[in-house]
Amino acid sequence: MSRKVFVLTAESPEAGGGVEHFVRELIKGLEARGYQTEIFHRGNSEPRWPALRKGRLGAKLGSSLAGYWIGRNAQRHMTAEVCAVISNSDIGAYRIGGPAPLKKIHFYHGTYRGQAEAIRSFIKYSGYLYLKWWSSMVLERLSGRGKLVLVNSEQTREEVRRFFGFDSTALWLPIDMNRFSPGDMAASRAALGLPAQGPIGLFVGSTHPMKGFPVVRALIERLPDVHWVLALRGSMPEKIAGKSAVTVLHNTSHDDLPALYRAADFSVCPSLYEPFGYVVAEAIACGTPVIATSGGASSMLLRMPPSSELLVKDPSDVEAFVSAARRIVDDRLRHREAVFAVARPELLRLMSPENWWKRFVELTGLHVA
Image 1 (cartoon, rainbow, N blue to C red):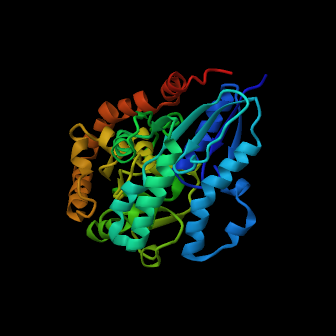
Image 2 (cartoon, rainbow, N blue to C red):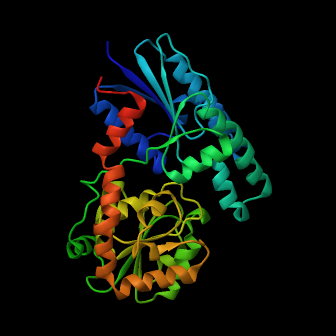
Image 3 (cartoon, helix red, strand yellow):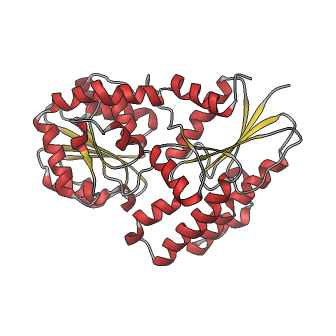
């Protein structure tokens, strides 16, 4: 009998975003180990009427009901072949059962409560309460109840313990170390049409306040000798796009990111809340120093000097980001060598696919089917 795993997640794995990238890697790894996978998300589970509702109330209603629609759809497709259900984030509160014993696994990628506290000044008080108490303390907490709980970092593990009272294991996230690997900086710059000489700083993310884009704007103004590459998702900043020392790339393919990391002297991640931080791990994997606020990956990978000099405690401290960038520009070799000596080996130990999957199999019991 073939073995099947259901994966429940908010959005289609084809969408952009860290959770969606993780789900793609999860599906690929499970199928390589002989499991069939079936994915349930809003796009293939939600009835048409919530998708047609507009405005903030409609969006909140759709988000609140997403877990119900997705869980109900998975239950409708349940057969004796299904051996495990893996849910993510706040999708998992619906109690799914099957004719055969099920492994029930929930993966937290951060918490909405942690996010709500970080972005409180950027959202309405009603939105803060909605994220903190409904999205997090109701939907997220119920999603992990009675399941094997896995998380993407020690930061998330502590949040899940403190907010929900659940014990969990920090499994981290898998990084393709073959694709995200060091390469020739000059060749990457030439291929991307970037300046051959002079320092290049990189930002991969969006203009959303949670990603710290105001800090990026300030860095561009304060460091005119640095050429900046902004790989942005979503809305585009009109005022920055016209600057001669800035290259703006819109909706860059994930496959094209390694070349960007290799071309840069450093990357910046000024997020207000980053429970993991793929951009930090991917840059380190490519051998590129990262200036980052404290987050899941940055706290782990930048804890030893001189990389610890690049860990910024206060996300609003522009001067600390400027100072860190100047340290790298003044001594690029020292900081790049530190990545290869300390940070990248730690990344390899925790997040290379072979090591990650070994721990995943040990924790879940999902051996080769």
